[in-house]
Length: 323
Image (tube, rainbow, N blue to C red):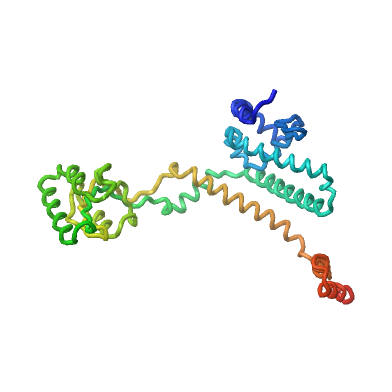
């Protein structure tokens, strides 16, 4: 009976929640199975091949991947497409071509190198205490986690685009005078007069305004008001005249470690991993200098271009190789 890939994916997602823990354990223990996970015609993707593809994903991301049916389906489709193409290529004897053999060998070396570095990384991660590293970084870089002072304000904008500047200032002063005597008119006047498109829905409010978020004249007035509920005299910006009311004020403060712990641990893990890889690679690269044998470059150019100039240079080099 034919079962669609979509139906397979639904079953996989349901089963994964129960089996993923054991699945990951067996994967990292080196266990594998030749049983198929998906087939198409004569082409088969085995459980073991899927495990190999899964191992290319960082271990911390494997559970989210396995429980996301869409992502698993995408990978399975790509694996099957690659398998089908490879099967056709083998049937045509294309894998016997010397250049293809060379590319296959290079791919093996690259994958082996990546897997080896992954294993080195995993060993280093076992002994690393990233929460402690994160705590140490936090204690020595507290200023990086400072939340700047902020204000909650509300404003009424009298734009000078739809009226002259003098008319805008006159109207702003009239509203300011009314609000000084009856502050409770604020919401009514916002709805009737404010030219800020967003003011109708939120009564002209801007919450947690930090330095640099608003144009400077607006910001200077907003941070200059001292008393909650106070409405400042009209302030001019390039948009017109603003009536600004202070609704709240917060002083600068340092975020607690618990607030930033998750991002700091991830940051320290990333730094540690990169450093561990770099340190290990440096031990490989210091074993000896890179050596290009005499005439190797000339030979390569002669083989690829095969013209009089490159052939003569190769022949000349063979007669008088530079040592």
